[in-house]
Image (cartoon, rainbow over all chains, first blue to last red; front, side):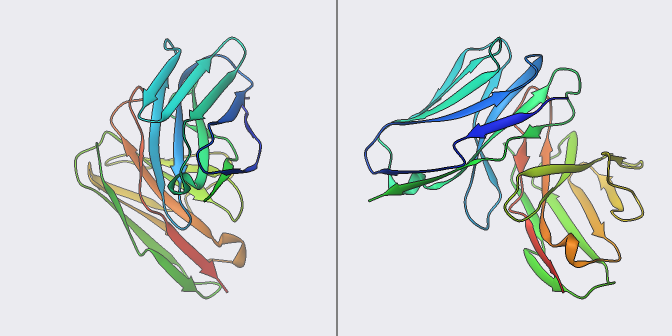
Amino acid sequence: KQEVTQIPAALSVPEGENLVLNCSFTDSAIYNLQWFRQDPGKGLTSLLLIQSSQREQTSGRLNASLDKSSGRSTLYIAASQPGDSATYLCAVRPGSSASKIIFGSGTRLSIRP
Amino acid sequence: SAVISQKPSRDICQRGTSLTIQCQVDSQVTMMFWYRQQPGQSLTLIATANQGSEATYESGFVIDKFPISRPNLTFSTLTVSNMSPEDSSIYLCSGGNSYGETQYFGPGTRLLVL
């Protein structure tokens, strides 16, 4: 059974710092992995999608990497800004059951001005 | 990309009543899903909404409690039936066209059951 874990559960850093959010999954046979952002009281915004054959994806100040063999993904945020404050969710689409996305519990990020 | 809207955005309901949540997508999508996010927790898939046929429910969720309709490729409803305080959650609609593509989410419906 696929399980997705995100550490830390919460993170607070000063503005301008580069930071890394971690995601691990127990079954390396995945279809793809997606990072989402959730603002309080709102839905999810897709940030980056990495297919199982890819190693990384970049969008602006965000870079997501995928290491399937070790069951890990990281989301790198460069030059953090207060507007980056949100909960970041990692979600895995299993290879054996591609219809179902399995979410991690999220990392609540706070950027201090 | 797809933009997904939900109605209502929030509601406060009495125990024993039912609430129907509507989900509208601005373009046709092959797949539509309903998720629940309980306070302080991550998202759990309730069911896959199938056009013109019965929804496919995940373990722990049943049609009598969460009836779902999907009459076409842009619209779906989720009903939370005979509500109890344990049903207080955020309910999110999601859609997409392919397992290899981004899955989009609505803003969610915040439900509080008293």
